[in-house]
Image (cartoon, rainbow, N blue to C red; front, side, top):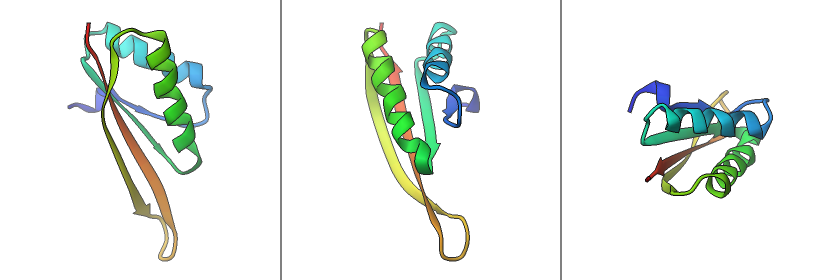
Length: 87
């Protein structure tokens, strides 16, 4: 899957990411990936739930949970939510 199917969650409102996901689906992408780390993980879950309630046929394909090493003693949690829309 190419990087154009990836939505990286940051400081924008949830509705902006939901709109970006809808646009990707309308462009013909069958799957998208919602990526977030740290405090934005809960926002990524909210984005998925908003997508599921607004679009029919949205399903969860896979969730990957990991952590990356930021400094020597600091780990940052990371989530990757893979979503498919079946029409």
